[in-house]
Length: 218
Picture 1 (cartoon, rainbow, N blue to C red):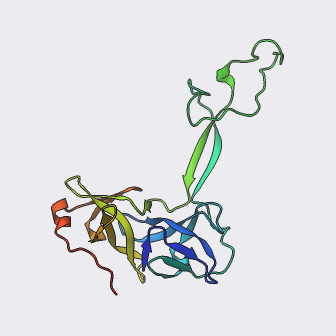
Picture 2 (picture 1 turned 90 degrees about the vertical axis):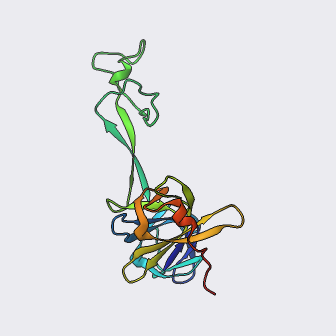
Picture 3 (picture 1 turned 60 degrees about the horizontal axis):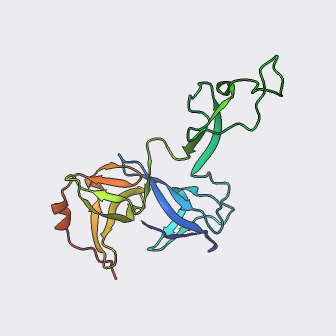
């Protein structure tokens, strides 16, 4: 099982729904829990697809087990304006705050004339964003930087290989260079830490340089 950057995602009846944007994994166990499928074709928003919906994978193609409408899957990110009780002295100019559409004067004040009540008395709203992925997991971007223990950037994540029975990431294919890319295979056991856009390894850059170059099987 493999998940390549920008691989096309299809339903079982060969209808394209989008492309791979991220792979959601548990940094501790390396378990892959979900795929984030970029909007396009059937999807109008990035969707969270459970890994158990995957039927098969190839280098540039992922096929799902279903032919049903997938719009009911949760969006990767959701946003909502939430009213907050504390007053922000920078409101409404502070980034991330929304000016309310309606506000009302304090009792005893008229609508006309001077501003009926002070700016600080207006209700404050903050934009909250949350992601529909399991707690403790990371939505790793394919193309994320790979950093060694001596703080060297040795390549970018191009593909993730996984054990189909255990649904765990086993290796990363990393590449470096613009045109004639040098590719290396890195076991996930060498991963020390994972963020959305970086993978930190527990080995040195010299160690990675000595690895044989990856060549795909014929």
